[in-house]
Amino acid sequence: MREPDLEGVVLDLDDARLLGGLYRAAGMSRGPAVLVLHGIPGHERLLDLALECQARGIHAMYLHYRGSWGSTGRYSLTTLLDDVGAALDWLRDREDVDPSRVGLLGISLGGWAALAAAAADLRVAAAAALSPLIDPNRVSLSAADFAGFAAPLSGTSGPQLAEEWHQLTPIGSLAQALHGRPVLLVSADQDAYFPPEHYRPLVQQVPSIEWVRFPRADHLFTQVRPGLRHVVTHWLIHSLAPPAAAR
Image (cartoon, rainbow, N blue to C red; front, side, top):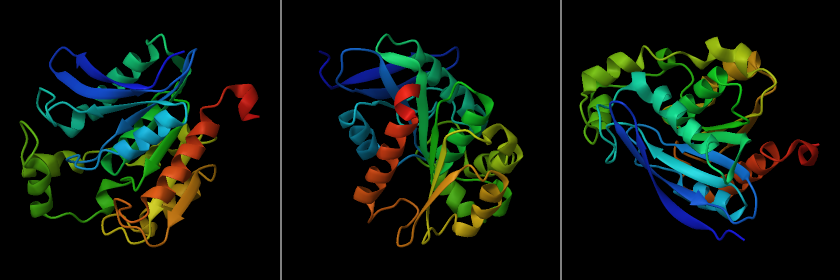
């Protein structure tokens, strides 16, 4: 019987070393796994949700993109999906992970990455996006915002991040690839960055998306974490269940 534990993760890429950790769930066979993606710059890392996933039988890996929080290399929004892809490959290759039951869980910019990566990779079994960026051109951020994002990151600047931000692919243009896929969208009605109106076009484009709103929550769901953990982990348990169990 495998006991739950926390394993350090080091992914060596050609031009960067990515750091993270894996909350391994208890079990005797290959189990489901979720890759947890933080936003920008990544102060909120959803580790409470990772621990809840572990307790519920889902391996949960958190990742620091290159140039962030000890990972080497230059931070760039243009390489986020490369880092996500490398982490997904690493998870799928593990002997304790069922490669057909690997999902994504991200918040804010990490939510954008979860949706974009799921659209690009049909092997992603499920994607949960919490207060995600959907369309960078429908969000008003200041030079001070981008400067604040850049401060703890390596090899970038506020102006560079602003330029790369507006080059990110709107999720609406990827809607066709998300139709009929297990996708959870969780939004916060008091979100100062992405209010509910930010999400309506995507939900109309992809009616199969399950949209859950927290009326009193802010961008980081600060005061509703127990409810957030309940909603997200129960959805992941169902969405990453073996096919027979899911039916």
